[in-house]
Image 1 (tube, rainbow, N blue to C red):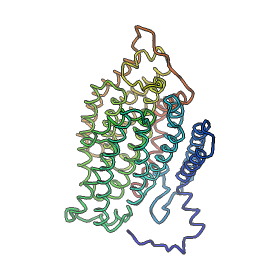
Image 2: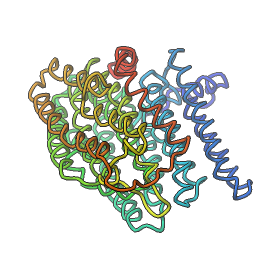
Image 3: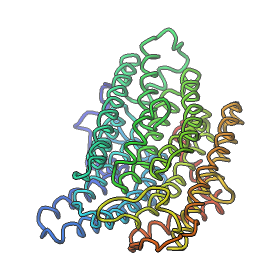
Image 4: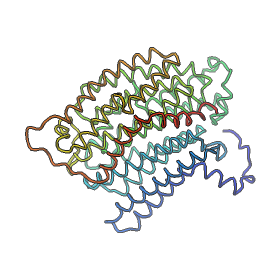
Length: 498
């Protein structure tokens, strides 16, 4: 590891405060986690769940406020001897993950009570995962990247098996633990080889040392990049490393699946952008074709496999695989347009995909979840708001204008063509056409008249608020897409060295 340029004696109180301001949202969520754990220890049992939910919600909203303040302050810089940063790329993802955490708490508070699961522990695991994801967004060293990766991964391994009486939940946790462990090991081995090749774990130092060099004269470096690509492909559910995704999504509790579907993907892409587009930007010809192949395979396999699914959770799992392929187009393209399109799509994907899972929450009974396509029959007639919003989410994921999903794909595809990856964009467009079939299939079930008395829906304020806010933002960001795109392009600048 690099020698520390500044000795501990020179680390003054003023610098400690300055460093802390760079990670203020992460520190806020960390304090929230500690307070929630203490409340779970000292409060009466009947009050622990509500207290943990309230503490988590307040802490995440405070973290979101701090991230917004840091964004407009715009004075982000490296902190803690180059291990993290408070630049706008980091702050952008902190706003995304804080928003995701808020929505998750709103949904989980109702879900865990309805299923009879321990509530306080669930919120603590959610906060731990958010901390890990934020750390990845702010990481500028391979060490801090891996620490963030393992922090959120371990929390999600436990959360997937949170329904301890269900074999499907335990199976999902076991599969995710085994596959995730292998992926983490591969990533760590790749990082070790990268460190051995460059003599540094600092991404900015690595970028400088490989610029102008011939990678083919350093087989260790090439192998390290290959292993990192494979490990990162596992994390984003890229083909052919996607097999775990449908089973884990289906077996995990619904709020965990919703959280994972957005959070793990966004964190993994933040990691990819930092390591590949920034740290390994000088080797882009070597890793671009690797990621392009994963993108093409993911779009084809994900969309074709989704056509035959009868479970909404499995359908959205394969949809997520295909969506990862679309986002990889922006990663491969690079530049401000490509990276900006990635950031734009990841933020709006939060509302489209999370909202689709939230619509399933009122269908949950104390005995089981109801995620079969047939369970959606007549949803639009049983609860018009849920039916309309589910239609909005499906059409947005399919890319229908003027919804935000259309603009997200348009920005990615435009950047891909401008960057010379036209063949990849052609595959993406054809795959998107295929995806319309299964997204409209969901809409058809939602508006299918019921021949018999419908199952009564259990609507609660938390999920309704999460559902409505996701729907409103999916439409609003579609109408005012340049507003979010401008923020995404600004967030992309640190990756480009500006």
